[in-house]
Each structure stands twice: as C-alpha cells, then as structure tokens.
Image 1: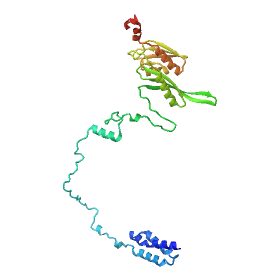
Image 2: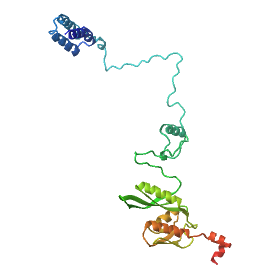
Image 3: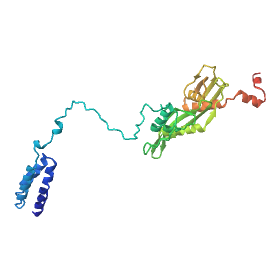
Image 4: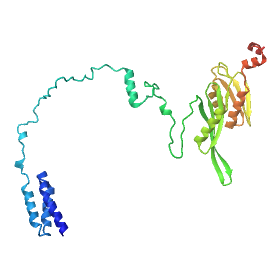
Length: 310
C-alpha cells in the first residue's frame, strides 16, 4: 500500500509541470481525474491530490490571455517590399552562371563519363575500358557458372544438338551432343563435337574442340575453290565444285555452314550418301583438305604457273 501511495504522490507533484506546457491539454485533465478517484483508496493522500486538481484547474489559460495584437494591423494581401541587408565591406559577389567560359564538347563528355562511366559509343575521353560490360561475369547461382565468350575473331555456329543416352549398370545416363563449326570467314574453319549433361556445356566443349582442329581452305581471288574435289567420311560423301562470281553458296545442311564460315562466297556443294550432319561436315573438311593452290603445285614441279595448262 505504501508503494502505490508514494507513486501517486510523485505523479501528483508533476501535474503542475504538465499543466504549464499546454493550456488545454487533455492529458492533465485525465491525470487529475485519475488522482482524484485514486485518492479514495488512500486517505492520507486525498488532501494532497485534491489540492493538485485545484491547481490544474486554476492554471488553465483563457482565450483572453492569448496575445494576438501582432495580427491586428497585418493584411495578408498587402505587398511587403523586400529589403535585403546591406553587404559587408569588401564583399565580392560570385560570378553569374552565364558569365563563365563556355564548356567544350570534350569537357561535357569528360564530365558525363566521370559521373556515369564510358558511353556505348565505344569512345572513352578519360581513357577508360570501353569493354567493361564484356568482362567476366560472376556466378549467377551456386550451380551455374557463366563465362565470357572468347574474343579471337572466330564465329561459332551450332549445326546440331542431340540428346544421347548411355546404358550403365544402374540405368541410363542422359547427355547432350553438340556439333559446332567455327570460322573467321578468311579461310580458317574447324568442326568440333562435344558431349555434356547440359546443352551450354556441350556447345562450349564442341567449340573448343573445333578450334583445335582448324584447317585452311584454299581459295582464289573470286572467293571460290581452285578446282573440283570430293571427300567422304564414314557413309557420307560430299562433292564440291567451284562457281563463277555472283553464284553464291549453293549447298545445304552442314556443308553450307562450313563453307560460309570459311569465307567461300561462290561454290557448289552436294551431299551424296548419308544425311548425318557430323559426318557431312567432316566429309566437307576432307574434301577441302584435298584441294591445292596452283602456285603450290607449280612450285613443287619447278615450273612457272603458265605452263600448268600446257
């Protein structure tokens, strides 16, 4: 009982402070009402609480006590002139925005690059790396790793992707086999094959295998073959013929892809035998490897090139 009495006494002593903050605060009236009702439980604190309640009622402000004489002579629609303070002695005003020297295009480009990095135009004013977006990408997830493409000037083209299975003791293992042709369209071409549990990994393996098996395609100044040739690989057989300028590449399937990536623009090709894409691509490589340039044959024979057709 003594604990509640002392608490009520302390809070009653703080009531004048709350009442002095705001004249019409509902918190003070509630506190005074609380203490007046709680005083019934403690006869000793009843006179003190009732006295504090009287003090709260006496300290409430009246509407006449608020001083509003400042707004008596104030008209909100009047125009009040702006009277800035006088500048101190020796004050030099800063130059205006339009008075400075005009910035050149290089200055604007350098400031833009400093804020946002090099632009997509491929030109860096500050000498930054314009291929910053092509850098090696970090792991996209815990199970997949994405690597950047090799920038060696070779173009990759997928010929075929097939799902293959391998029968083992516990069942069947599923893999993907990809056939990829790479070439720089300047006489270098290669055919590769690779297997993996994912398509992307299979394509990457086959591209690496194709770069390891590059060959040089002999061509004339009209971007065609120097002579006829035939090649076979397994049950597939391919026939290649030179063509006049403007003919284009008339071939289909894997033969066309190999010739286009090699840089041949005028040629005739025909698949004879099997329709297997991998065997036809390798048969095309065999047929190309049988071709020889006229200057090489003349050098081996020890005669000038004009005497080759005599």
